Length: 322
Image (cartoon, rainbow, N blue to C red; front, top):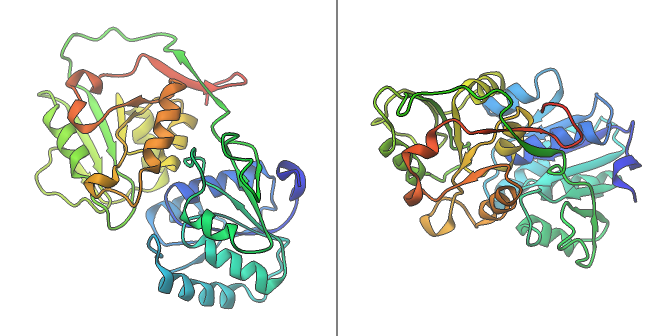
């Protein structure tokens, strides 16, 4: 099956968790040219409210990583909410809620397509490995390095659109000038990311202004404006207008920064610090760093000069500004 054309003009049920999975599935709905009345199933959040405004949406209770009971409840609710709808395909990018997509597709007897996250460079996620054992799933990798794994096919990649170029008209800044900084930790629960927050706070200069989007990392000791979540429009404005954008390696966040023409400063979450369930963020950010699309740092290596405005911008690989 040629994924790029197989479902053009078809109506899909699009199932994904919030964060990078949701950002990717929205992008896939556009890349695959699915019908605009396709239905999205995800969790309530500022991201989903903003990103899916004006689209058909089924909101489900949050399913944490490896949340079996919550996945079963999501199956029941999703079936009830969509049983009168007609779909040509069920499409998911994960995470655990991707298993609910599989069950719905099998019950409804329609094709089930799973596109593994672009952050999975070394092999499939836990959801992808479970789906390997289940019949009747079209599974796609975005990376040739493991697309020959039994039962998988190579599909297009969302990373191939971008190239890095020097800033066309750089602004000359005085040494030590104050900076406007936007820091985003994503919204994954229940994982905190204090190591990144502390690293940025410790490298601020007098006069720097900071906006924080902290998700589960609630803090009351930070300078600047502190937010738990931000809507898509506010997020985009802060990424585009700040001197530097500092973020975890959530793939949805990274893709959006690149689309806005911004090279972010990225500190990946690490499982050894209790910041995520595994180290897939390190996989994606290493690949992007090799392409020059991000500046990669560990918290202990962050220096104040890293928070200066980057000397490059991101453009679409085929030409034109992102």
